[in-house]
Image 1: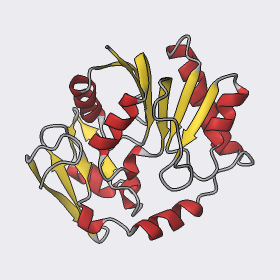
Image 2: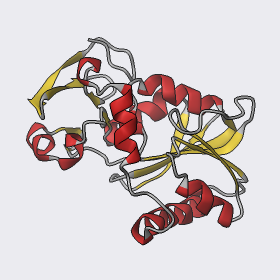
Image 3: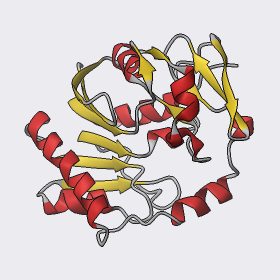
Image 4: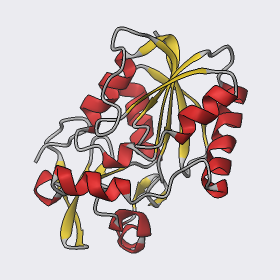
Length: 217
């Protein structure tokens, strides 16, 4: 079975549970759910509509505001931003506009139209990359939307690891993998591979749920 991130065939069964299986790639360190265990698209979309993500949710807004503060600290002189996977109620896009940025949103279910000829100073994807059935392809799409020296910011919960290696016992107990729409899981070693493979430089990471990278070309 080929890895959906790096396309390597060096994958193996990592864990069985939650009525599905998890494969691990020894090249890029991605942990992923095979496509045979993915939800049908209509069921996946219905689950997204259950999310209570709105400007009326103070905790949700505060979470995004903290990320915007980090962007302003680590990504100087950015103006135009694409929120990739913005959801049916694009809260982050609204907050970015409030902060003075030119922000646009794309979502494969809810906002499918975006200017593919545009080049953005920053592409940000929050709580989205774990849903990617083809993360390698999606990352290439995001990079193609970046201007030279542009920034890529990703927010997803990093899987538990030990010395940057897979930790089966910790992963087995990890709540984040139990969401049936979560099919791709990343750790610090995965992001190291992404940076090296895609000509990116890691600018900031908290090794928990947020990373900012910059194109080197």
